Amino acid sequence: MTKLSVVIPVFNERKTIGVIINRVLAEETPKEIIVVDDDSTDGTWEIIQNLRLPYRVNKIQSHNSKLKILRNEKNMGKGAAVRKGIDSATGDVLIIQDADLEYDPKYYKPLLTPITSGKAKVVYGSRLKTMKLAFWGREKTPLPLHYLANLFLSFLTNILYGSNLTDMETGYKMMVKEVYKSLDLKSNRFEIEPEITAQILKKGFTILEVPISTKPRSYREGKKIKARDSLLAILTLLRNWKN
Image (tube, rainbow, N blue to C red; front, side, top):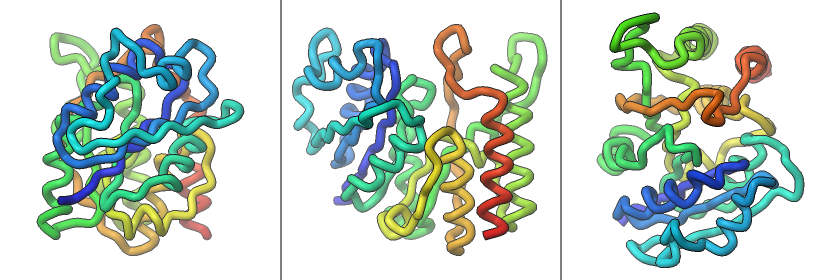
């Protein structure tokens, strides 16, 4: 059976880290869970080390799953944690899983299906395939400025790299070992997302998109990405395109 490497970069997520590990464990695909703590200061690291109750992750070896725990010696950013996780991965397929509960591991199976069937080597979970922009009403788009920024970044990616993506910035990027071990990533922060996409496309791999839904959290709830990260994403796309 296909073994999935789940890389979980985490920084100061003590309220959610145990929950997300449990959700990942609940998916029965054989997997290794690689948690990379980015020098958390809120007790997250202690929870990861002890895997203590009430999170009930003490049966971490169940469901054909194994846990690897890694840590950055100083806070370096999401990209640095992702890179460390990828370097440690051994699975046939890899996916990046944020620790903040915005992305639901229930989508692992629909993302994995095109890969195991041989239809794709890279699959992205697109939040924007079905989401519409609305500034008010019951169907108001969460964080509409983020939505517009993601549309623009996807548009720019398509212009530069000849792709047809709707959601380049998605956190759910799944790829086979041939792809993730070929990446030469340098980014330390959130620009890791466009860097991964740019390198995949420059290497000639096609990215297939599968619709997903997420539950975006607000800045009050702890969202970390900032407006400046959109500018860094643009610069990263241009730099990788030029090189």
